[in-house]
Length: 293
Image (cartoon, rainbow, N blue to C red; front, side):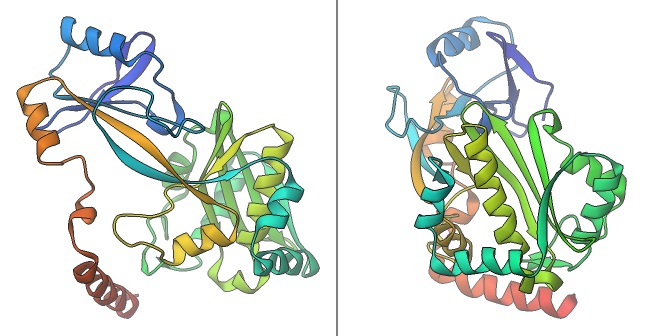
């Protein structure tokens, strides 16, 4: 990415490659309240070429607020009212797992982001080379690498670690932006899966959101590409997440930008592959990774 561009006291980044798409820096965490003023600035200021201006609408605003071209993104979110409401709405197996973690002595504590936590993270990350069937990007990485990757937004984040006795068995990172908390990381040791550390961490995240008067706890997308209701979506549904559709705007500013939109190049490449083709390809990929690791 190129250096950030300041427009109306907000930071934006321009994509690399042939098509230049300008987006808000940290776009998941910011609202764009005056897009037309930004567009006017892009058309009049001497700044690097911008073919398309893109921004997302965030919860709770699910209906399109602007008369621009948009595609529909989906996000997974728990609407936060009270811990009791969340507890009643989750799958009964989730409640059993949270209670099991408590019964087995799993504790979840808020922890500071420091070298000691990075060391504990490394123990968790090095537990298994694969996550959801693919190589885990933080497996056997150096403490410096982990600190860099996990330290983003640390000034507005909470870190929670799940412990069994003195052993760290799970980590959760949650970043706050206005009335929204975004889970960036929630990982448990595969070898400690029987102790349900992920369920214990998620329960703690909901409790903290209630404490901080957060309205939504988000965790990526509900559906990715054309996968539909896969194991990740199932996990989210059972744990109280709901699917929300949100407008993602794309405003062409040049002829090249109009080509970008006409060809639907804003779509993830995975969305262009039919699921009937992608599913067996993923199965073969997962088998190869399992054999290799």
